[in-house]
Image (cartoon, rainbow, N blue to C red; front, top):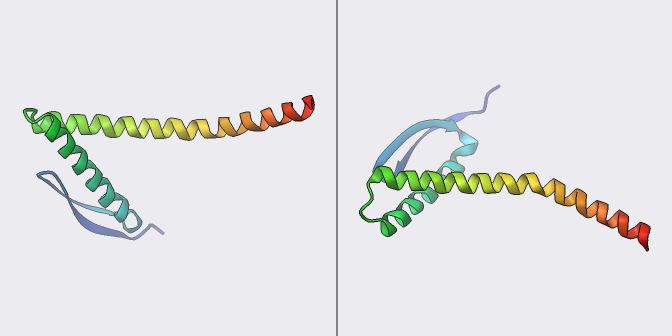
Length: 95
C-alpha cells in the first residue's frame, strides 16, 4: 500500500508551488523551502543587480555543491571506519 499523501503550498521567492507529497515528507519540504529562500536572499543581497534567474542559478549551484559534499562524506565514512579497524589490528600485532 502506498504512503498517504497531502497537498501543500510552498512559496519560493515570488514562485508559488502547489504539490502533492508523501505526508511524512512535509517537514523536509518546508525546511528546504525556508533554506532555499534564505540562500536566495543571501545572493540577492550580495548581487543586487543580478537577475532573478541568475540568483536561482547561484542557489541551485550552492544546493548541488552541498548535496555532493554530503554524499562524499557519507561515502568516506565506511572507509574511515575500515581504516581505523585495520590500524587497530596493526597496532595489536606490533605491540
